[in-house]
Image (tube, rainbow, N blue to C red; front, side):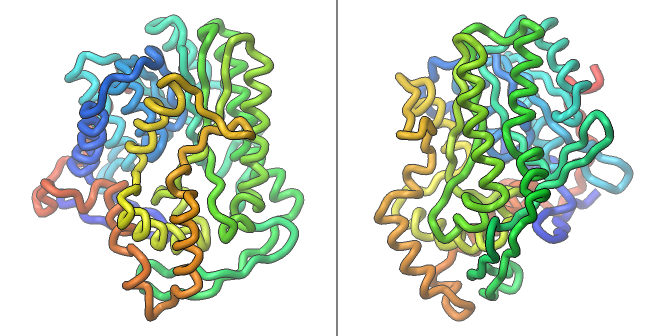
Length: 393
């Protein structure tokens, strides 16, 4: 079938299997261009199908030579519907790993559930014995509990409404948006979904089952950003969840003898998560133009390669005064943020082409789903039914 991008809101409802494979192979090639990292050898990546989770898995496998188990929640192709991008990414990753003789298996299901945790533990026991690194990279909008209760996260402020600029990326029009404050219940629900509770549940389950190595490392991901995004991120409902995540890292380190829990604060990038947050897409387009001009722009794979090589395992860990790994160090440089602040004041619909890298934003957006990648014949018929080798074995 001929596969074209179809967008709805901040997601693309189609994905291109050839484009996704090219995108994965491009990240693999980037990692292989760098020296090997003396890092983990048996890695579990929870949330492994896209963005920072996928990049972490690629870096672990091809940068460290690690066997990896990935947890995803994706759909295969069905009838005229393509598979999700995460499905195609995972199929491509396993294909690349097999070519190099690197162990890679995947569990597809709700990572919040006990059933998936048990399936993963069984796989570790059978194939790896133990894991020495756990990457927690979930970005889910909701969480279903065993008793049937469903918690949903919200993208809101806390305390008071917040008004600032945002952009309609399709029309390229800058407009004002007001983010309303979350209720106490909404904040609690957001923490339940996006905080550290499930991360701790995973660590408890792995430890109790005897599949967590004595000196294992575990890392989760977060974002802080500049003051202009703080009201609806760092100080917002998501920020409350991230504060819980930071506290969870500390509690993991205290609870499990020899195990180290970290949170890596990463750079602002185009992901399915960030695209949904008001104000952030406009900030990203301004930031992209400035950082590309400065030669310091990084994508997910560049961030994760540098995390493993420089900040976590290359003589690390390298932590700030709060115990956080700061992969946003280049983004938050004074000279970068002062430029962002100055241009933020000037950006409006008539100046977006001059001050914003909207084309770069859209390129990253579509490439997440396998589109707009060089070397792909998008006019060719493609079989959307691509298997993930380890699923269904």
